[in-house]
Image (cartoon, rainbow, N blue to C red; front, side, top):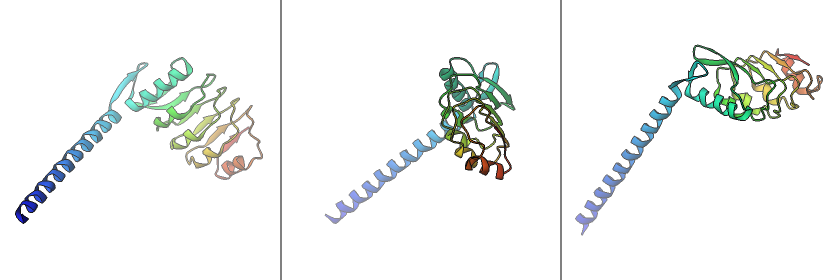
Amino acid sequence: MKNQEKEKEITDKSEVEKIADDLLNTIEINDIKDNQKENEVVEYKGQRIPQKEFEALKAIEEQIGKPPKFVTENMKTTILDLGDTELTDLKPLTHLKHLKQLLLHKTKISDLSPLSTLKNLKQLNLNFSNISDLSPLTKMNCLDTVFLWGTNVDRNSEVVKRLQEKGRVVII
């Protein structure tokens, strides 16, 4: 009886090991697919850009009803002009990690929190937008200049003062 229990135990271990191996293989294959997708380059409006950026720009295009204006350097989107559009949601921008300049003037955006992931953003134009909370911008270390003409932002607000203390140019 004890031998049968030992055999069953070994068989159970073999099954567990097989399941673990299958799971590891599945995880590795999914990681490889994700990496391939991230590194895949596609063409959009005559520019070659990474797949993730393509998906972000297509999501923006669907939101504003026309292709966005953008500039690339080394196949990365670095300048994006979404000014004077019906833009309301900035979440697709989180995939545009190489953005240096972003124009959001005359848009309907109100939540800037998705921008806090854009670690390379240097210049942000929010003129004549519905922005009032600038706190997400305080986490952006590369940000040099913020344009805020025609917004509801008070030039004496604590957030504006914090941005200026960090050396940011805030133009209201």
